Image (cartoon, rainbow, N blue to C red; front, side, top):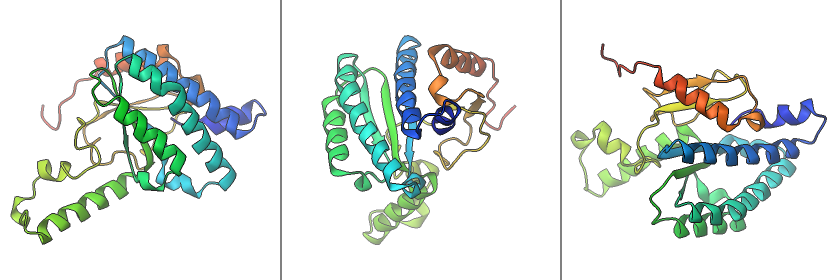
Length: 222
């Protein structure tokens, strides 16, 4: 979800205002996914590298995340949506983590759209954490090296309970992966739009899905 800062700069506003507008775009995306009956949505909300940003901006982002959870949590419950989160969540501020855990638990039995927030997340870190988890299983004698397969490795990823993405949408014209779901997107279709994230509407989601529907996915075959 790229472009919050640029959106604010173009309007002579503080970066925090761009993040606020970006949170509103998330609401648009949730509505669009619900209307299109899309079963899974993963939002790259805060990367592990984002901790390097100025402390004031990080605090503002965490406060905004806390507000988003409080504002949207009940709505997600009412709309039968399930909330999940992936990443090194232990680094989140206590009040944010408590709200996140509360809404994950409250929506755990829901069967509609599964919304996964990638928070304090990095694709390389996820792979490293999976390797460390596998090593611990080997050291305890639960598995042997010759038992390690792609399927077993996937069971040690943060996304073990999620399918691999079909479509990756990249806003603001960025043409890089930015350390997002590196294992999972091996055969994911990519849609890039020049729109900045705060300007991303339901119509843009529909355009991305239509583009995806016109692709021929070969998964390495013919």
